[in-house]
Length: 241
Image 1 (cartoon, rainbow, N blue to C red):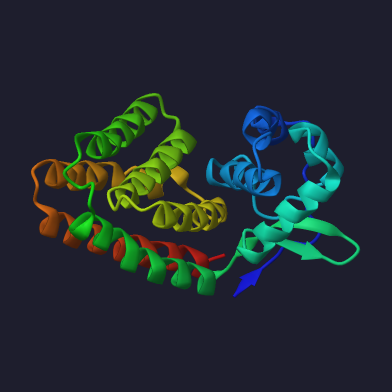
Image 2 (image 1 turned 30 degrees about the vertical axis):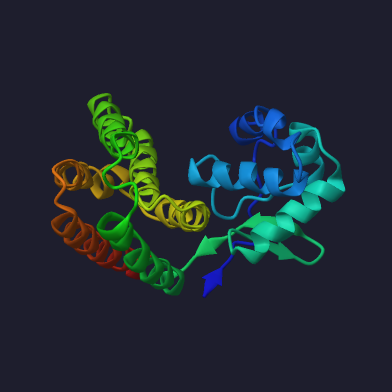
């Protein structure tokens, strides 16, 4: 189940998220526009610029993206169906606030998808695809070196997106984008960003080394163990909220 904070609004509608969305105009100009708008808004959630409980005013989004309010409304409806947003009658559309049941369900999906992508993926031997794993590891290390813990969290999202990218499936890539959007909302509910994400830098590196060495089965087992550990850690944190 997912619960929602009904009285929280975006404090600065002209802030970072809307400014970033304005940069997506070129993508949104391609058809179908509503799908592109949904992709742009979802990406703002994945990258941490839209937070749980924030209100998404249609007029502000329409202006930022240069599209009609009808297009924005259609895109937001898609994201509501994906459980990234929720629509409250007479109040508007808000970013979802996930609960423990949502965490469990997201991890059920991730435990099926991510280890299989490593074990069976058609691109697990592709240097370009594997290189994205290494790039995400390096991104995380660099962010940690400058004490940019939100940056470490973002790099971790990019790492898991790259893991699923080993499958070579556009449909799985799209599904992972939905899951990562929900995961970002989960992380926003937790305190101690550094304490949670920093230990996984070594885990990401270890998994990448196994994939680089062609040890797919061992890498898949490490991914599964890693995800189970993360799930347990998150649920323990949620129990204290």
